[in-house]
Amino acid sequence: MNVVSELRAFVRAALVDPVPRDHLQTDRAFHRRRVVAVVTLLVGAGFLAWALRIEPGDPTFYVATFALAGVWALGAVASGPLHLGWGWTRGGGEHARPIVQSLALGALLLAVFMAGAVVVAQVPFLRDPVQQLLDHATAGSLAIVTVVTIVNGVAEELYFRGALYAGVGRRHAVAVTTVVYALVTATSAIPLLVLAAAVVGLVCGLQRRVTGGILGPIVTHLTWSLGMLYLLPLALDRLS
Image 1 (cartoon, rainbow, N blue to C red):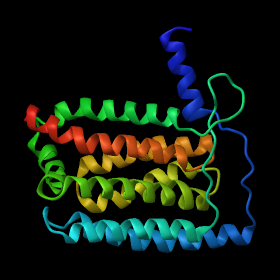
Image 2 (image 1 turned 90 degrees about the vertical axis):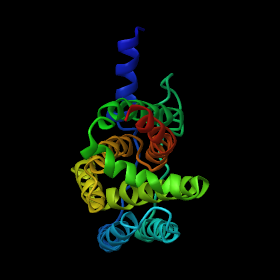
Image 3 (image 1 turned 180 degrees about the vertical axis):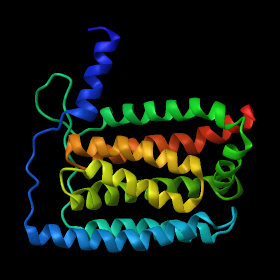
Image 4 (image 1 turned 60 degrees about the vertical axis):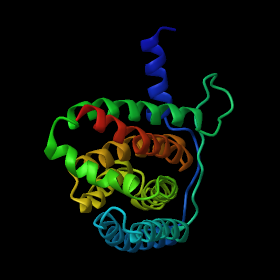
């Protein structure tokens, strides 16, 4: 099998063909999940807007971001059952947890965004807002920011690809969760962060549709976000 065929098979297995499962819920449970998801969304959007407007180096940033993660996670758990999901195996036999597949998707996303950094570094209008966001890592504790990145990445996927996705229903779940994720991120007033949310949200949404769970999106999200945290500042510094 040549490289093109391998890539096509990977994309179909990771983002196109759903793994069979039965996650049906009663009408009452579905309605309850929707109510909890909406309330969580409103509260979470407010916490995110607050966190992203805190000056770099201010310890309040850590409090705000951990509080935000708590909102997403508690809302997701309160909404109803969440599933880890299953992925296709290369041999087409027993399904497996979508870990290696998701690591590969996260690495591909990271490569695309790092290539885009070449352009961003040359345009102050795009570079400066991103640099201000990354200053939280350089002005504060990188170790703590790493923990914040992990905790928030997991919490976001629990909510957006867990509770909210299940609350939307089957037909338009990928589109709705991607748009909502981008709109919530728009409270940051950072155009490239909104674009990143749309792209990552779409990929993770498609993963959620294929695997039927949150594990794949979590692994992809963390691979991308941690890579960006450590590599993007270096790229911007060298290319600016």
